[in-house]
Length: 406
Ligand code: SF4
Ligand code: SF4
Image (cartoon, rainbow, N blue to C red; front, side, top):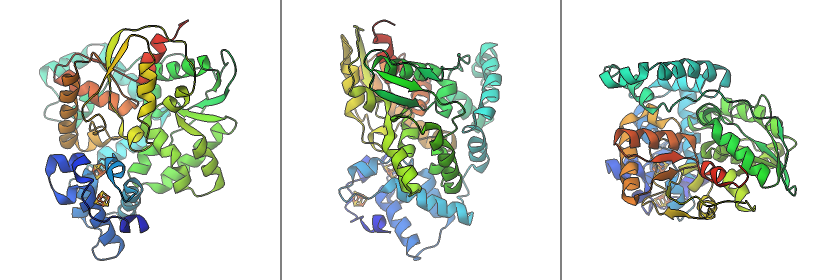
């Protein structure tokens, strides 16, 4: 309740809010949403489907937190309020509950996601995807079409990373690598590159077998009981490392907040050890060779706003000799990915995706980087659909390509 009362209705957050910028509606702004959440907490209004709709439209991007001079912890308030809606079973009539259920029962479970992606890989590699897209066969099925459009090329499952990768050079410590649910299947090279960079920086890298989902999707959906259970299952996998390294902004942000949602010493100690890969590498020397190219950087919301990490990825990219890093206007405005928001709210997500690509086009960069798999998929999709020919990659991909001795 203190967080809700901290809002002084100044409106400074409004221009930073993507949904307010698009809709111009007070109740789809941070100030309006805080007003609704406070009124509900004080029993002045009930938890209604209309209020649920305003919260569903919120991306949870937390740009309002960055802007707010009063320190309103918007992300935590949103998640706590969504949990109340979940408990009471109140949803907006527009809520696509079937898609959300499918996502929560599939994406965080590697044993289910893997076989599904195998079928999708066949769909792509046999040329069926090209025919389906060319003929617009999915256009009568809007939701399916949205999900299909987002699908990146599903790579062949690479060899599993070794459970232990030794440090090269003077040893700095022992780093545990989170594989992530989307990252391990859609971007396994990002995990391999992260491990290689950490090893080159002097870390012995541990890749715990059987590590499960961090629970971020459940947290954002207000499924707090399931989120807490997932967090409790994940933490022991990283019991014997100095630092838990994460290369997916959404996962890292959630794992740093375990200490808020599970107020005990185990969670506090765990959260204190979680770091984004850019935080870890920024403190290390890396032997990098020249790669002349023009690159721009998109701030993933859960890095810039959720973890306050902006400087480290940029500083690392600037260390690559010959690389020119150009500013991306509105770099920290959400691209519309927001976890699985783009699957649930394709209209708003599409507008934000197209806006992001327009800003990227202005930079003239040939390469776009972002530290979150969801952003990579969303930006790639909208670049493809608007005919912008750029490479969209994680910053560690560029660093690993520049790593000497590769
Ligand atoms: S989290 Fe993002 S979308 Fe939601 S109110 Fe804040 S700025 Fe707006
Ligand atoms: S900036 Fe903070 S205090 Fe001002 S209206 Fe927004 S949430 Fe409230």
